[in-house]
Image 1 (cartoon, rainbow, N blue to C red):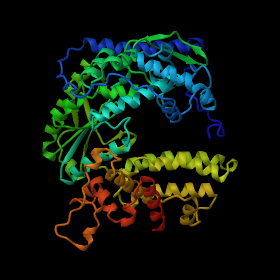
Image 2 (cartoon, rainbow, N blue to C red):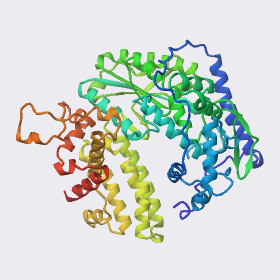
Image 3 (cartoon, rainbow, N blue to C red):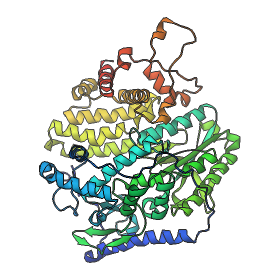
Image 4 (cartoon, helix red, strand yellow):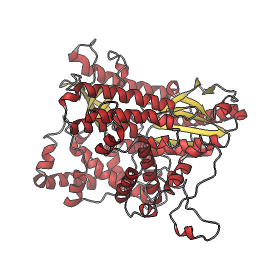
Length: 582
């Protein structure tokens, strides 16, 4: 689409620096930024935090060697992306797999058995990417580094991750409230859990304080020695397996590349590799001791990688005490982060009070006091890509989605005459419908006046794809495209998540919010053992919008044969057919 519109998909670059010196300028900036943060953290006094409990299970001492079949399965799961460091185009690995597989297997198994990572696997090519299109491209601080690693190095990491995850899951070592890089977890499940808590608190006439924490270059400042000690002490990784992680982290280099002009390689003294398979997972293990601090303060919390948030609730007249407790918690979090070489960015930390309009009017505080700054309370915050306002009406989120979708629709409209119907439908699905569907379970229970704004976007999309006029009836068009209307898409998402909760395919924090209905006395209808208990709530705009209310309410209305489907795929297919028939 960018090519047809004459727009470049490449990130802009500064034009105020000699192109021949640009790579080195970015390299120096990225390196100095991390060094400055580390130097600053070293000078800040801090108290030693309590050490998490030591691992007491069967230690993870070595990796299991792979067979050709094992490796082929892992390789076929990977996206074929070529990096400048690859000796040959990645597509050739797929095209010539039978010939190349034995050699690749030897490299992988040698690394696993010796506990070493080849030096050639520990170099990254970095491309600068402008953080937001609206930022000044001539300011280096407006860019973030995007690292590219060789294909075989990422294959090795994926092999290691599978075995690491097996150890972590078997020993129940993962934080139940960390939703990143885990099966069945997503930003949507995280936000569903958070909003469920907030809506239920609002239903009880309480207000909630939410703080969204921001870290500066979080992945880049991780201390290798602390991480390795934590892998050993907290997660039971020893011997050859620990040696492998030590080799993986040390002697890593990166070079910035712009228009095939490379900077001098820089040795990375800290951090987990950006753009890697293992790096994000290692970061979540590194920060897991934070759970103990937050639990000690009796504060609800949730994390998605380096995005962390805290929340708690109270009566409106206790708002000052509520915010003070959040502030005290953040002080302890900040102390732990300083001790662990992470920098909490107070300037980007956000806070908001959430409740009904009448209860919020009784709150007496307008800011969250931190040790080094005051954070004003916002009327809305962006949380994992979703805008949450202080009454959780979702009006600002819907407005934001609408603006973006109409912008994309106008772009597609300018090139529609060059596209087939099928190509246009695919383009609209990827750029419009994907935005309508993102975290749409949060919209369950909203008034039809709110949902209708999104429905109008879908209607316009259908007319654009099929080249129909505004007066043409929309239902036949949606049926022709096999698109469920927006309300049905929300129903589809809620019921799919409910099915997953009941079949071990969802996070425990969602599954635990549902329970099977147990009748007080035996009735003929009690033969339906798949009905869920619907909790008592007070407010249609709060408790009745929570997942713990919406999920059972919608699930119980489905026909029993539909709820009895034996697989997720068969359930989704039958559910879609059912919703189209309504």
